[in-house]
Length: 171
Image 1: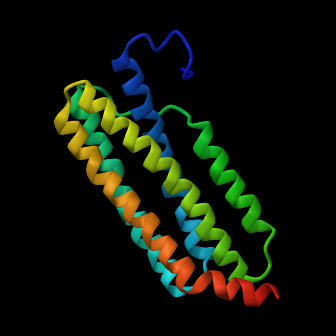
Image 2 (image 1 turned 45 degrees about the horizontal axis):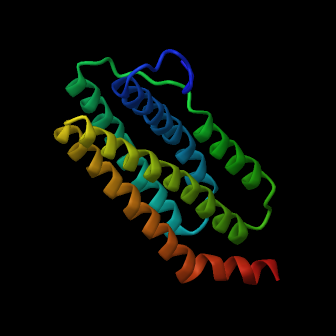
């Protein structure tokens, strides 16, 4: 089922499709984060990725609850956007030899993922609200708050130390 196919006929169909899309994305993120944890060298970055892996597992459980509230099976549809973001992150990380520069690149890649998720969850919350599904909007809101907090933590890490270390390393 593609986003612009005849499979999506109603606003409810569109909502469900986007929910399945983000469900797929969260599963892909749980596969990518262990690799990022392994590659990161800054202890606070490793810990941040580990914390977010645990949060992501909880976010998947929340999505499964949303599917349940809708009376639908929790199922994923391929999300080319998240696949592309993760592929790009892997390619960039594979090209960087200096560990401090790699940490900065990992933060940038993680923030690209976070920004994608923030956009998706924001849209899903607006749509759930429009569809009169306030309980679902609330559940998704918990995840959106976590995604925003993760993005803020990554920015703080980058600006406090990691970007400066990458600059010195690359000089």
